[in-house]
Image (cartoon, rainbow over all chains, first blue to last red; front, side, top):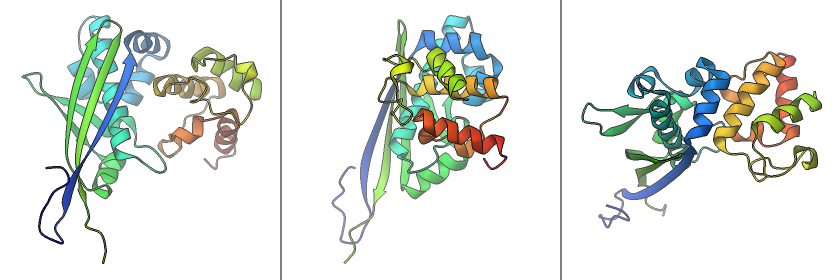
Length: 144
Length: 81
């Protein structure tokens, strides 16, 4: 429900959307240049395990996950320090479906923004990976 | 320090303009630096200056301009970062 029509005083819900795009060759180049320092700074163990495979295949998955992290930041709209990249995790189910798990600063920002649900979609084609994130958040009724 | 910063930017920031034409306070994101490129800039600065950016400095503003990068590096070198 967006722009809810509940009783007076109830919390309406609104939608935020974030999207981002990452060039897969840039991820390959960063892995070649910075190695594990790059990977460890950005990605959780689960994310790295989810993107196992030949370098080009792994980089496509990682590029999509980096895009997802940036898309989450766009929906969280931090006023100051941005959350650590690893505090935004793309969780991949055995079916291949992906969800988001927030911890630390990202979870705090989501709580402050009244985010009640997050959805993510990842895709890649050729040299490009894209992520779209949708957030439902509470919209407090106006005072007075 | 500024020469090293600009060398890192020339190698990693993927600016749409020559880094020599970028003023100290010019917005590097407006000049074409992507979020992913800023990660490479951060890691390359850590290599060049033998420092590590703590999480609380990983804000967009830290890498937004040559002047901001210089300030962050000076804070880290002085132990106040």
